[in-house]
Image 1: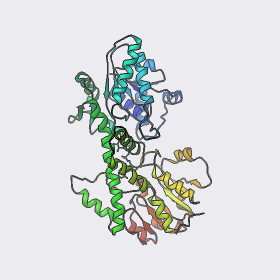
Image 2: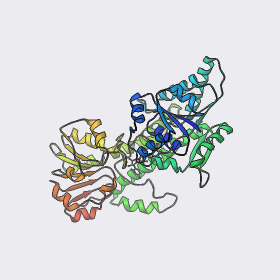
Image 3: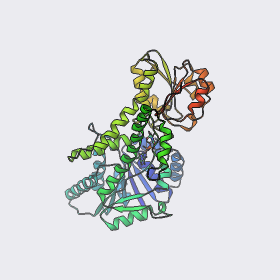
Image 4: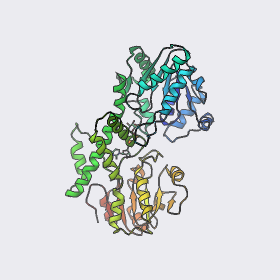
Length: 443
Ligand code: UGA
């Protein structure tokens, strides 16, 4: 089938590549000529495991093409995916200007039936706005061409996006037109094999499903983080409590890991946007508000522990940080806990020696060259001469370090584990103090 994808960012590229991989003829459109040139010359503008190879393979097979020509895009595909950004406005609500601009452009150039598929995470009611925008342009053009708007939210995790697309838990298709639902079913058939994962519903429910899923996951994390602080207060061990409650299948083991807060481009933005949607309609979403507030506080927790450990005397100290990305297997640092920590350390007059397996370049891009930030080439070099080691991202390679080597390298033997990933007893045995989340310090 012929498919057009507007927006060659994270969601658009993964969607385009995966649809090409199963044999569709995909044309990706983006307004950024630099990005399109890069893609046309075999480069990929983002880091995502497996994406480079798939882009190259499908480009060479001629099934995946890139252009800045919106008109060519509209002429190309029956399916017109909208996967452009929806950056948050100042009040946290999603800014729809790019989505609506694509809708207008499709309406401007279409000369036969088109299906507009909302893939971007957009507030409830956006599909109606998209349809209105198209209708207006068509009216101005003096035509009554047929079109449909579908809500088809993505559920991709950064670092596992290709796999999530190829083997989805669910494919949500929101449309009031049963014929369109069948066309989407045909498009998604290669991803919908072992049992039926396609869930057809009305448009608004599909739009809300996306926010509900992320808000639920964020709630689980904030709940555990709240509980970890209570555990510390009452003298309990949150890791024991986690296993204790996770064994109840109604609760489950997933997404109940306490830590130094969630980040990324999705949870913080989506929780705020859903709160904003509810507020704008006169409903006070108290739980969503608390989820965000608890997360904000959690991101300051490690700094507060460090501050307390050194009796407020941080000026001139250097701290080693392991992990800068908001989670492992990505270089994405949007809303990352590492940023709150580094900025607090700098404000307190301390400096940072940091290492991340892939996010070094991104860190340089965000903070530039500065005397209080040293980016090292490996994890152990970061620790050299530092006043403490802080683990911020749960990369696998940080899980079993040599505590003896760390002890030797640090000028002040203490580890702050923001993700509870290393064995504190072993650290203690090597002569290090060990502070973590939701447990008594080992000193
Ligand atoms: C999230 C959702 O998990 C995806 O299902 C969704 O499709 C995506 O948002 C989206 O809306 O596009 P993502 O932001 O890539 O995916 O990352 P997650 O793996 O969910 O991790 C988010 C954050 O939560 C990370 O900072 C992670 O360290 C933290 N986390 C996760 C915890 O603190 N505890 C946990 O138990 C799990």
